[in-house]
Structures are given as C-alpha cells and as structure tokens.
Length: 421
Image (cartoon, rainbow, N blue to C red; front, side, top):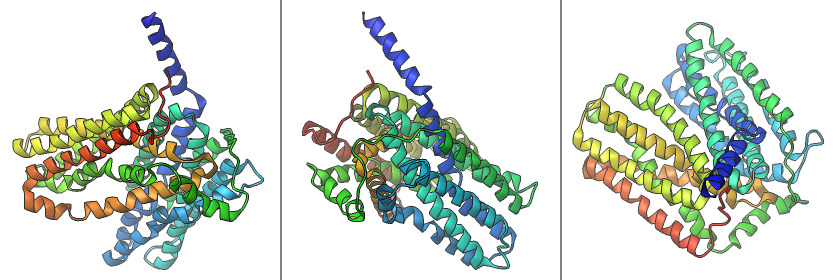
C-alpha cells in the first residue's frame, strides 16, 4: 500500500513538472531575465567601447529605477484590462512589444554622440521590463495552484537566470564578432519567444474578480494585507529569511581574493560551476516544495542556508584550496537555489488574487530595500570581526527568521502551504 501511494505521488509530481503551465512559467522567466542586463553590463561594455567616460557610465545605474518603483503603477495593471487577450496576457503582450521596439531603438543609437538619447531609450527598456515582471508575477500566482507555487517559482527563477546568461554572456561574446547594434537586434528577435509564449498561454481565471475602481486598486491592497493577523511579523520574516545569505554573498568576492584565489579560479569555480549548482538547486527546491509544502520547505532550506554560510567560515580556516572552494560553492548555491524557490513561493502565497500584481510588487520591492541597507555595513563588519567571525555571524542570523517562522506557523499565520500529495 505504501509503495502504491509513493508511486501515485511520483506520477502526480511528474505530471505537474511536465505540464504546459510549468513550461509557460519557465519561458516567461526567460523572457523576464533577458532584458535585465541589456541596460546593465552589455550596455556598459558598449559605452566603454565607444569611449564614454566612466562617470557617465556609472550614472546609467539610475536607469534601473523602474525595477524598484514598479509598485507605483502595478495597481493600474490590477484595475484595468485590455480588450485584447484579457487582463494579464493583454498587458503582457503590450509590455513585450514595448520592450522589443525599445531594444530595436537602442540598437539605432550612438552612445558616444547622443548619450542622453541612449539614457531615455534604456529607461524605456527598464520600464517595459519592470512592467513585464509585474504581470508575469501576477500571472504565475493566478495560474498555479498553491501546492504548485514552489515548483513554479523555481522554474521561473531558473528561466530568468538563463535569460540573463544569454543576454550578458551571449551578448558580450557576440560583440566580439558583430557590432553591438546587431547584438541588440538579435536580442530583440529572441524576445519574440516571450511574445509566442504569451499568445499560446491561457488567461488565468480569477474568481475573486478585479478592482472596479482605481481607489480599490491603490488603497485596498494595503488595507487587505494589514488587516491580516500578524501582518507586520510576516513582513519581518520576509526580511529576515535571507539576510544572512545576503550578507555573506555581498562580501564573497573580496573574501575569495583575500584568501588567495585568482580571478580565473573565481570565474571558473564560483561563476560557471556555481551557476549550474544554483540551477539544480532551484529545480530541486521546486520539486521538494511541491511534495512537502511551503512551510516545511522553508524550514529545511533555511537550515541548509545557515549551514552553507557556515561553510564560508570553514573555508576561511582552510584557506586557498580549490576542492574546498568547489564544495562550499556547490553546497551554498544548491541550498540558496532551493531556499529561493520556497521563498518566492511563500511571497506569492501571501497575495490576494484580487490584487496580485500590486501586493507582489510591494512585497518584492519591500524585500529589496532592506537588503541594500543590511549589505552596506558588511565590509566594516568583516574588517572588525575577521572572515571567520563575519561568516559565523552571517550563519547564526538565520536562527531568528526560522524561530519566527515556527511561531507564525503555530499561530496559523503562514497561510496555506499544502503539499501536492
């Protein structure tokens, strides 16, 4: 009997993994990741090649503001629906067409001659890209069952990373053989994969309906959330869950260099090997969350994240050792990928489907700001405490978040977190 149940459970998981909605989630993640670095590292390389000064290149970081301010127009995407394709797919198609046209427009600019034009067009790209992110996050929440959010999050994040890799790594490699203008035209063509996904995907059915007035779309998401039991403490958990992981990651490159690793060793082991470990961890995290539910997955992955951060402290004692570095990176990226899958799924589960776009945009923006604040003093902390002490503290910081998760779950404040079987 136990074997039959296990077999049925395995088959059920496979059906979800290879379902059309998971393929859509993966492809939408790819479409969201592709534009991100077209206004980042790829554009920086192009401007540098064209002779633009470093101060101006540095100022171009400001074109990324739409990613942090996207909650400002997210209510419009909840309130209004286009006549074509429905509320989610209609806005998604408009955002993607805007992205493609903006990328083509950027290919027609000349950074050295009209830098302000490049800035305006780059800002348009980030605006449409952030809008696409808003709609895709809402679509994923509405199209997937609660038990599928973890796997959906992992596939979305992995697709996102592949899109980033193609745009940055692939774009820079292409730039050695063709002009940057043509690189951007190639990327605009690749974005058509996102358009095809949008056209083929079904419009999610939301029984709760949508806000009927703009006031409902702007005010009610806040009111609805903060009326919930332990609303502020849940936000505190969102902030705490990955704080230690963020602190450790922010100082990892100086740490590797300080204990004697070369740039090529870091690039090979940390970046290339680590990328695939993260992809594997994300997928594994999605499957585990699908099987055991969000709450238990958050607990298990949180413990693994703390232990993996402690691995950096151990590496500080070992020093320059390639096998030790590979082991620490494999463990850290696997656990980080798994934790991200459950974490993103948990945030999605917090949203009310009537205000999905707005509440998720708020949560993701709220999560990002304190990360910057927490990461800022890590250099001073590492200097004062030494690498072993710093990474030990980063590992121990995982404990308050896990204790808060346990307490919230006992009070029934973590929402639904059921497994598939």
